[in-house]
Length: 120
Image (cartoon, rainbow, N blue to C red):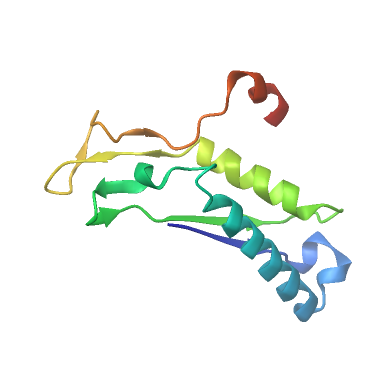
């Protein structure tokens, strides 16, 4: 499972000095981000399984907006994907201890070679 949250502090925009406006926008952005991140097109659920049907990883993505100047969803999505791109999960043995090079170790999201320049 992937769980996303978005924080829009008053620092990022004068429009978010009102808590209700910030809470509404944060909830909308987090919901949209959860929909995208839980899509099988972004990340296969099987990548999060430690033991099939018994044990799996849960990813929490927390995005903090420092400067709100327009399209916050695109930036939240890019930040979340960049974080997932740098995330590696260790393989776990039968006893739950980390194994150096097990079959499930590795990166979660791989950016295609042609798209790497566009994200950076």
